[in-house]
Length: 76
Image 1 (cartoon, rainbow, N blue to C red):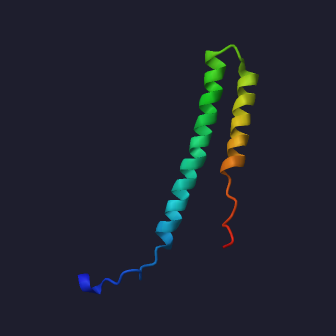
Image 2: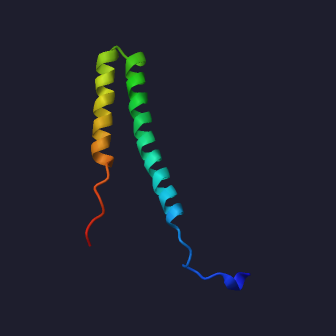
Image 3: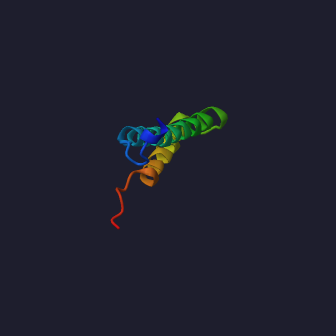
């Protein structure tokens, strides 16, 4: 049984795909949660008001998107 195993012969495409989906969901989910928490905190805990709180949340979302977006693989 153990001798039938050949290291490096298994197709790991599904595991790689699952890992990339998990990392992507964690990354974008964290950004969405951070923007939501900032918006709600400013709205309810300060005198900022809804419109200004929403604007700050939108700025955080857009800034986070610009920083965390995929840039493609570098050419080496």
